[in-house]
Image (cartoon, rainbow, N blue to C red; front, top):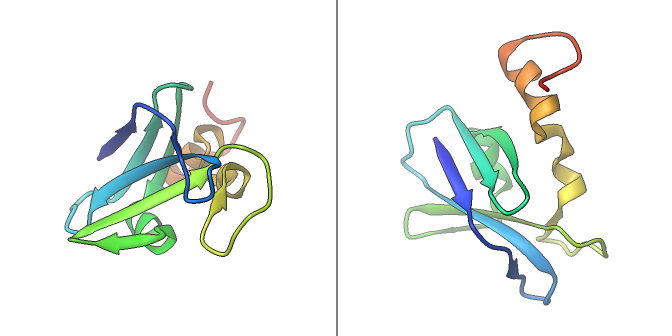
Length: 103
């Protein structure tokens, strides 16, 4: 399953963040979080997506992270916190491939 983000938005504290929303009943094993403005994607398992999501309401899980450097709050994730989900790192881990990753 893929969820796309077309625009960055301010977080509660005014920092620039990216947010993805996925329905809790989504049957997919993996979610591909796609940032179209920066041409990045991060595949993450559905279970990890729900566990890391900062908000759960109305049958949806909302995951967001700050893309600006700065201090971290209790709820917020910084983009660096999710580097293990960068495509080059995640795809070999997901498919059990060893080597340099995807280019």
